[in-house]
Image 1 (cartoon, rainbow, N blue to C red):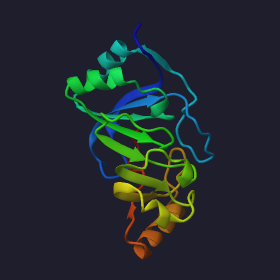
Image 2 (image 1 turned 120 degrees about the horizontal axis):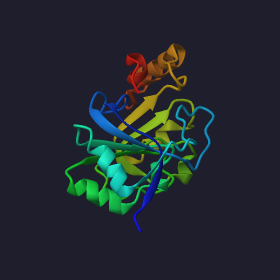
Image 3 (image 1 turned 180 degrees about the vertical axis):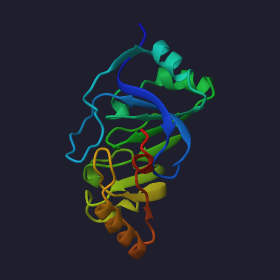
Image 4 (image 1 turned 60 degrees about the horizontal axis):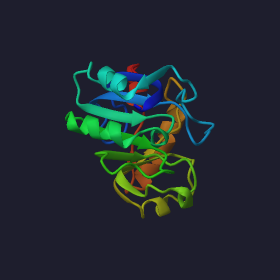
Length: 193
């Protein structure tokens, strides 16, 4: 029997934060999360689509990009190896945005961990970028010991707009702690998803 996926949405837009900002991607937003954060800006509890694996691939193929970002909710709760293998065979570049509580499938090309819990609970402790929402983690120096290529701090923003005060706080912190990079949600500035 074919895998089925509960999704909030599948859409095509630009990556709005982190190292790959500005790149065109197909976003596959899975429903459900293993956390419930007060500052979450995504409607992860919604199930707007229930698609079989072949239906999801067909939907993905409508878009001109070969870049996919699995997000959520928490995508590691739903993502299956069979889907990853089929998409890789189709020439897709696969990225994931995860809270890091569950290890990511090894076939994923780009791993972004955005932890929402204490470091001791994080199982995905290596990847391409670590992105911390500023103010949600203590002892940022400990996070720098993990094996990532890039270390970003992001301000907590409102659901639809940026919070200028929080942006400035992070900018000042990064200016005084240059081992971190600033990122914010430029898709909110541009008014895109």
